[in-house]
Structure formats: C-alpha cells, structure tokens
Image (tube, rainbow, N blue to C red; front, side, top):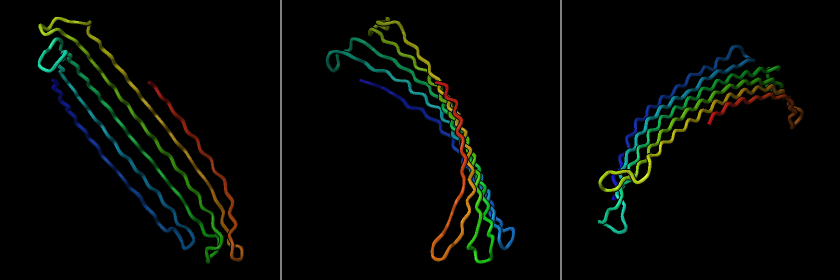
Length: 168
C-alpha cells in the first residue's frame, strides 16, 4: 500500500514589448523584447508499506523529495530594412538578436526504510543535486538584396556566438 502527496507551487510570468516605426519612406525598423520567468516548488512526501503479500507488512519505506526550480528567459531582437530605391528592388536588411536562458534546479531527497516497529532496516540515505545552466546567444546579420530582371541577387554576412555555463 502507498500514500503519496504531490504539493506543487508554480509561478509563471510572461512579458512582451515591441515597436515597429517607419522612420522614413525608405526605412523601417523594429525592436522587440520577450521574457518569461518561472519558479516552481515541489514537495513529495510518500510512505510505502511493503511485504511478501497484500496485507502482510514487513517493512516501511518513507521518502521525502523537495525540489526548487527557476527558469528565466530574456530575448531582444532588432532589425532594420532600408530600401535603396523607391521601387524596393534594392535593399539592405540588418538584424541583431540576443537571448539569455538561466535555469537553476535544486533537489533534496531523503529515503528511510523501517521495520513495522519503526526500527531502521538500513541507515537513512540523503541525496542532494543542484544543476545550473546559463546560456547566452548573440547573432547578427546583414543582407543585401537586388532584383535583376525576373531574378534576385542576394549576399550577406552573419556572426553568432553562444556562451554556456553548466554546473551540474
């Protein structure tokens, strides 16, 4: 037989903001910010009565798990399109993106095994784990477009960089 409770508290928030002004007849720019934050606390106490058959108990296992986790995400994007001619046959487009992801998870686990009279069968076990992950991503690009007859010519360049810090 087993009794277990899952107690969970979850708090999540989302944010978004952006603008897209047309600064002139030939230029349009855009900036956008997105974010989300999540905090979660979990507590899972449980008891399991064990035996060779149903109704015949020879031991009791008691566990307790507590976990706290946090996840934050932030991203910023900006781009600009500049038309070099009024027909839009020639244009330059620039884009910049920056994102940050932070995750932190801590878990504590306790495990006890008893005889029915509550004397220990095994020494109690305790475990703890923490894992933190930080990721930062930066990317930028510039592209040139030109219509040629019924076709299109395009060229450009891109740079990106990813930094990670993982502690497990």
